Length: 113
Length: 116
Image 1 (tube, rainbow over the protein chains, first blue to last red):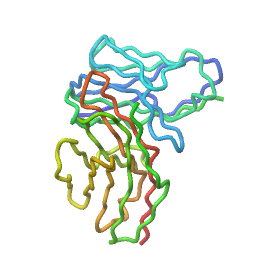
Image 2: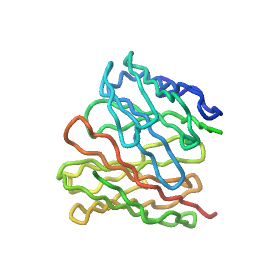
Image 3: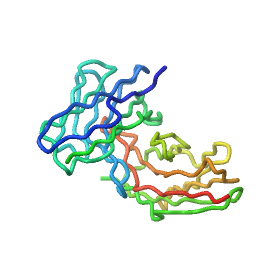
Image 4: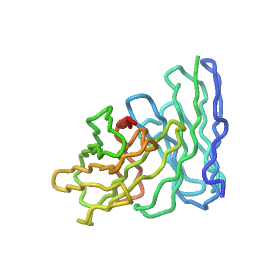
């Protein structure tokens, strides 16, 4: 099993450009998440999904959109990138059941100039 | 909303010694889960240990153990016989047991340095 994978690993954007981050998991997990990690702030939830075709807002959703057309994929979109979106982005997935571990991808470092 | 506080931005420990990382949380719920994750320089988040709030017994995983004080809303991590490979950022996290919105809330992290 590859676990949780993220594409790309690094990206540099100019202000106003758009891009999509791809997360894929091969563990048949129902739940998927997108987090951002900024220095001194831990991980903050952007959006999440509790199943194929469903999405919901997390703690910091502004400026991002997501889609989960297939159970194994969770896409995070930036329509018009801003310097404030410079961050490391993590995808995670888990099975249903609150005790279950979240498995994380390796992260994507995004810089917006 | 639940908040998780890690009051120690940085900690250091001598190799083979014991260190305790602190975590407190704020919640009005009675049923929830608590986690400690490790993030080494590779950036990969790795689960260290987890605890169910309704269990009074503290969780242990080899050299890692927790001191869970539900009334005090405290969830500290003890690392015994520290090894160089333990050097990393450590994040405490909270997850509600109820409802569909049971995402994780993370603390700001504690950077652990292990001295040889």
